[in-house]
Length: 219
Image (cartoon, rainbow, N blue to C red; front, side):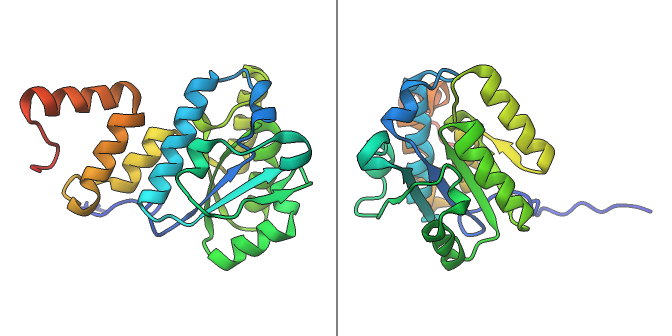
């Protein structure tokens, strides 16, 4: 049997309209003890995915735990991307056990969810395993999540993968939403965000455009 290739994307790839993003407990108290990723890189990556989601109009849930009594405010890198959006504050460590969050999940109505937050072994494992068990698809942005040690983070990621979650990175998330440089309506946004928060890749974009007037898609 001959298989014929077609120029169509895999169904497993993310697009701006086929998922919701859930950002969990990016708060100062949780960040103080996060050692598996440098705090500066963590904040950068959190800002990258938040701005990517906002720019591509991905439905996004922002949730915190005990914000006023214990854990503090959510990173401004995230809240600045969603001005005026309500933060769903919880008492439960597992986001999936909070009725207000689940009401929002059901209101958005996407069966594919992308998660990131602190800590990987508690705040991310809980809802990811719960979502998978209830039939949702779950993706985890592993470099925008962190834990009290490398061991804690890695075991949590492995546990989620074994259960069926799909790992990805922050820059991958942005570029997967764009996916084609010929998409002119989001080209400037994507390259601009990459230059600002895309690390070495963003430096490369800046260099190529400044020195040679280069462009990925003829723009």
